[in-house]
Image 1 (tube, rainbow, N blue to C red):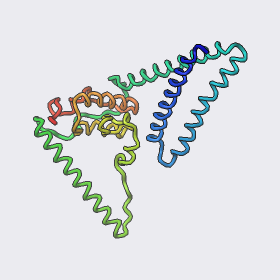
Image 2: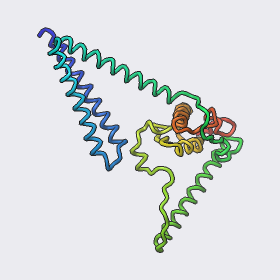
Image 3: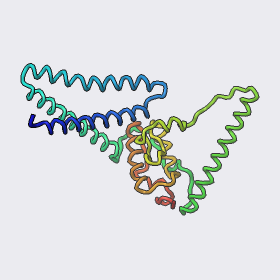
Image 4: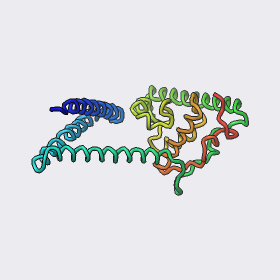
Length: 246
């Protein structure tokens, strides 16, 4: 009983770690699971949690019967520590692979020349981009009003959803966006990767550092979805190779 302070400290640390990990995992599952399947996902999650808690205890008991309690506990600690290190190493390698620059051949090419035309100065480029966005917004509004009027008169007009709905974007994790803090430009498939490249010079309210990190995420997503981005640097997407003033 002389080691009871270590026993209490270990129990507190283990309980805190287990609680924080469970809370974070449940929060991630709630965000990414489809709304109509969250009950099933949560049930499966808790089954895995309780199995993960129960099976090691049973294993320690079996090992303690065949050897000693000290050997059983030491073995469990060693296996758990090695597993944690392996998972951490895998996670770091995966993150580095996603952030790494470069690409491989055989992917669909996205020509830089497809971006909206801009003038040679950043100020004129801002005005042209803004006017282009206004025109696109007016056209979309006119199309929506025309479709609504046609439906009101009994015509069957198919509903088309371009891009991703706001509710769907809200369910995405921040790591699935090119700009996580601003939650701009989702990278969930090849179409959204191409859209992120085409709209990169229209994203406002972000710093050059944010753009550097976003470009790495776009390049990683492009590799994942077999989409080749012709530009080597995001500055090539701007007129004169420079970002416009904010």
